Length: 181
Image (tube, rainbow, N blue to C red; front, side, top):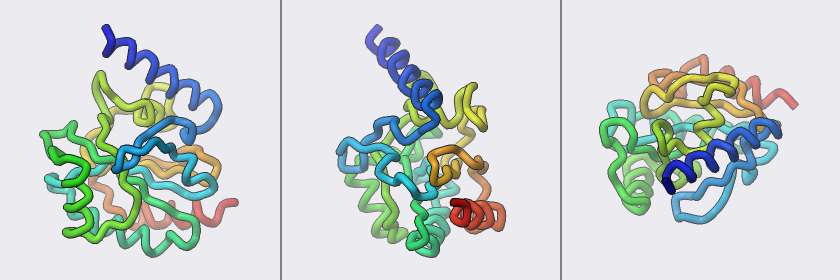
């Protein structure tokens, strides 16, 4: 019963955020467990990515970090959300995830606490990003799915997990979003 109540409250939070036109108000926790939200990146172009350390797509961390470093001074940020929803490919603790990302891929972009991106415990942010009322509805297919959010907090584009961060499709979308005021 508590799980159902929590899901209903989360769904209400996600729908309220969508009605208000902002994903930025949905509460999340950073990798250290501190309360935050995408509002911390207000005015920036944000690429939200569900990440995992033991996935065939994990090497995308290299291209994600390169993309972040290339555009961060222009108002761009990548926010990684570790997720263990797909074949248990992110089993680690927050400390293990941080250690892996920094030592193996030199990740400097923000990482959040591990969340669920699908199923009955889907985080409100991902419900807002991919739910039936979202701009790009549909289930999260796998790790490394990407959502590009404009400076105004609205979703601009969704990219499949296999679309690499260094693909022309992603870089052109990021560049266009950065130019839009």
